[in-house]
Image (tube, rainbow, N blue to C red):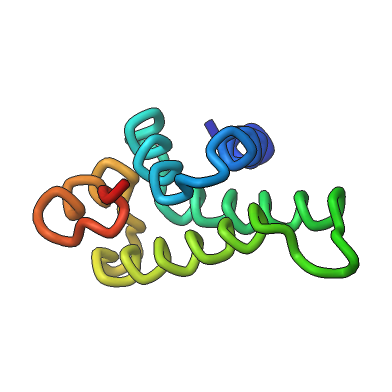
Length: 108
């Protein structure tokens, strides 16, 4: 799954889980383990932009859009740590790293 489909799924999950944003990353990693982590990070940013363009609240970003940007930033830090040369890790590799010690996305 790539591009717009991934963005759409992120938006659906953000709306469905307004109080559990970290679980979205964990759930997406389980659903799409072979997805390049950078593609998922781009989908989070794309979702934030799409949400903001559709649902502006007095010019202030929505909670979902803010959460998507925050998740993209956290995910980017994990990607940078695991990236080896030109290859971006997959969501499967990130999930393994979370289980091995950095549990930021495993917490409820």
